[in-house]
Image (cartoon, rainbow, N blue to C red; front, side, top):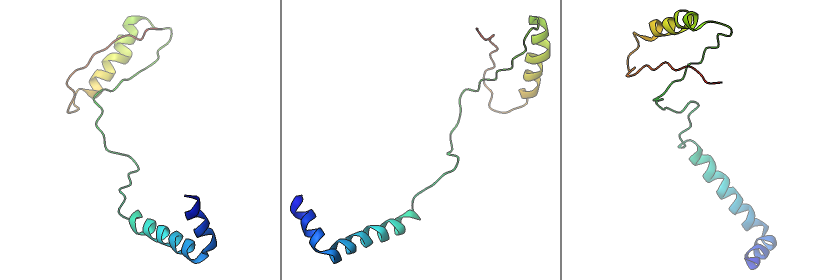
Length: 88
């Protein structure tokens, strides 16, 4: 390893040629790399949290839960809807 580094240190043309080969190879392959801003994935669970401080359970049921259920009832792909109170 040290012999190879010493050889490249003595031969500037060879080290520059190796560097240019690596740079050109990188530039040529960068166009074939698949880049995604937002990768595609499917979420199998969505959690909706709506704070409604100081409200009675009946108010939360009617003011929040029922409205969320009505808003999402026409969406395709919903297999199960479970409403659970947050602990805390």
